[in-house]
Image (tube, rainbow, N blue to C red):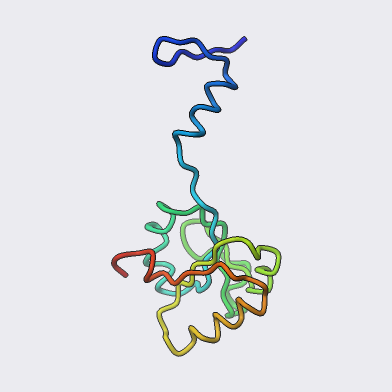
Length: 122
């Protein structure tokens, strides 16, 4: 039997792993919306805080391409499968933010946040 010692006590591996799950905070899964400069500039900071699965963008030319740091871009329609996942809007252009928010709502996504509310410096 595989065992571990902690604070002088002997635990099975399952017990030890369970205790560590309580100690190590797991990152929340998130998806970014916007694969442009804002995304590229902030992805490393966002990855420190979130488990970024992929990025979506309305630019069809980016679909299927690696954008930054191994993160692949998909078309936003895929978000309908991830309605409960946090979407981080990584677009600074204020003139299209309302369109993106409406698009997210139409896809059934109600958990979204703008990158300005997460990252201190953009």
